[in-house]
Length: 314
Length: 249
Ligand SMILES: Cc1cc2nc3c(=O)[nH]c(=O)nc-3n(C[C@H](O)[C@H](O)[C@H](O)COP(=O)(O)OP(=O)(O)OC[C@H]3O[C@@H](n4cnc5c(N)ncnc54)[C@H](O)[C@@H]3O)c2cc1C
Ligand SMILES: Nc1ncnc2c1ncn2[C@@H]1O[C@H](COP(=O)(O)O)[C@@H](O)[C@H]1O
Image (cartoon, rainbow over all chains, first blue to last red; front, side, top):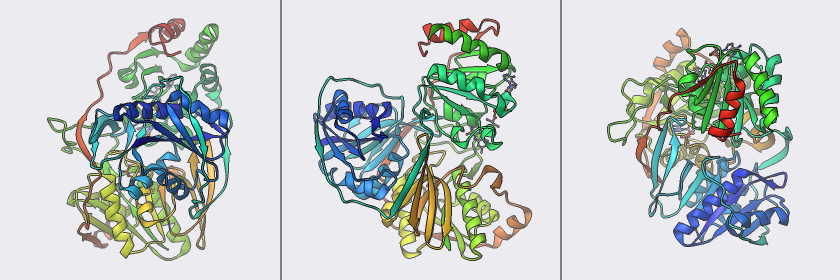
């Protein structure tokens, strides 16, 4: 009985969250005394696939013909390989969020998402996960022998093993009842949920024309930009940047909140970030109660200085 | 068109979350419950689709005990035509999805709308499970839905962009903001609230009640230490702390 890990690629490349999932799968395999098989859907060339070996996959099964937006096709293709697996590991990507629950229902295996730690018990599988929009840590067990786990981004470290993997191409004719027409992606954009640094701004910035400095700060830090809910509701920023309890969850190493008051709904989605910085003119802003570092001051003065200082060290 | 919207009743977003003494259960005392915010987008979308097609029915369905009824009445006040409550305390996504799909197998719908996740349990699973149990397509994080006869154009959010998908009804979606805009969300008015009182809220008994996961305990994350304040004239110090103390840049 092995461990399967779903490895997601974007335009033929893997991202950090993929390697985190493989590392997690490898640690789980050690607990079980078994090996890791990775499944890759879509076209990925061999040199990219072989990187999975370095995080602990001993075998990679590559299935080219299946499309990510087709949750039925993806699920069936993975189910065909899941018979011998005691654990199936996913990272928390948009596509994984369609496949993992389907697979759980199809195979009658308990699924747990938002997982933040390696299993504390393997029979039955017991893990810690985030619940109540990060307001709680829940310990959950499955009632099935096997388990499906989806790992919260940036919660499990990468572990390079220096290992290598064999690559096997498998044909699959699995196809669901949808047609994928195409994607529109902004290239070069770092996804908020995976980003290690997120620079976020709120209504304190007064208008969309003032976001230049936010983008610049994010860029020099190699981070993503985000915003509070009202900012996206009024259309200053796209909805895809809305973070918080009803927006995207942030699990960054560094979250910088600029001109954001720190409402409970905002904090709920961002406070599992490791370090939070608040920049706000109002010393009473609730964000200062949640932040690790803060500056009471005007964003329009502080942010340009930050950019200047960071440029000196990078 | 016959639309079913799955509604989860969740603690109001302003709620402080507490657990019973040994952390075994969520402590609901003093907590106000609301329609799961993602489900509100789905409910509004369902109302709009019904209005455009000039016919059909919007049914809301909730798995829960009698305490969820006020939230269901609110959904009826917003405009749903009828409500189904499956009389069981929802404990895991699998059992919730099993009950809903068993209902749907004998009461077919053209479109099944869930939210992309519930803000309490955050399972993000019920929609996908219903789809699998019913062998239907599932489009999650759905930010666009245009029905044209049985052929439908959907848009789902993906990392850094979106994907366009075509599907034929019936299918299941996981909705969120973008399916309709925030400004389009409907608030119950007096007339709606009055009408909701006489709309049918049918209670049916669970069929299987089989769970795949079990909660053992809950803890609140460790409290943060106090915030280190840096003078606004000394931004260099903040940068140095982030680099040398926190080691995050
Ligand atoms: C059901 C529900 C769900 C919600 N979900 C979310 C969610 O997911 N995410 C979210 O963000 N919100 C959410 N909210 C909204 C939340 O309650 C707050 O209203 C929102 O977070 C406030 O956004 P803000 O901090 O940008 O604006 P404000 O509260 O207006 O705060 C602006 C801040 O900027 C500061 N400021 C002003 N000028 C400057 C300056 N020159 N320099 C520095 N600082 C300055 C002010 O002191 C103030 O603290 C939700 C609300 C509800 C009801
Ligand atoms: N008890 C429930 N009754 C009806 N629908 C539910 C229930 N729990 C969850 N759902 C639906 O499933 C979606 C995802 O919930 P979850 O899988 O719990 O994150 C929610 O947005 C609801 O649409």
